[in-house]
Amino acid sequence: MSDSLNDFVDQLQEQIYEETREDFGEIAYQRWRNPLYMEIMNDPDGHAKVRGDCGDSIEIFLKFENDRVKKATFQTDGCGSSLVCGSFAAEMAGGKNPDELFEITGQTILEKLGGLPEENEHCAFLAAESLHQALNDYMIKQTKK
Ligand code: FES
Image (cartoon, helix red, strand yellow):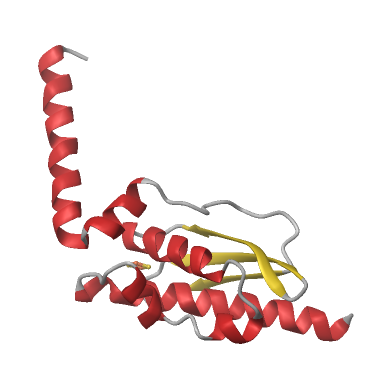
């Protein structure tokens, strides 16, 4: 690429970053740039993939030890805010027992990440629903043991 094209691409990238930071706030922006806990887990104890009305899906993977989440990860094929919400859902799940996991809701995810534009709030509820479905999967497996 020529230098001027490189400069143009760099400027465009910076502009996208700046607009995202303004729209989503600093906490969500930083997580979007560095989506922690994004990993497909092999052999999870609890797993769910839930597709929202928007057509995107969020997957949650849970590994338990002594009835507490030892490790939680997520994957998504969705928008930037689904990435942020899946990441925070996984983070918030760490160390929790089943009762505490049910207390993680779309609202608590939104509070944790400092809120999202109204049109993106549903991504947090999708992440919470995936987390609860993954917990259901774990609990069903427990009863079959
Ligand atoms: Fe579909 Fe965010 S999860 S728009």
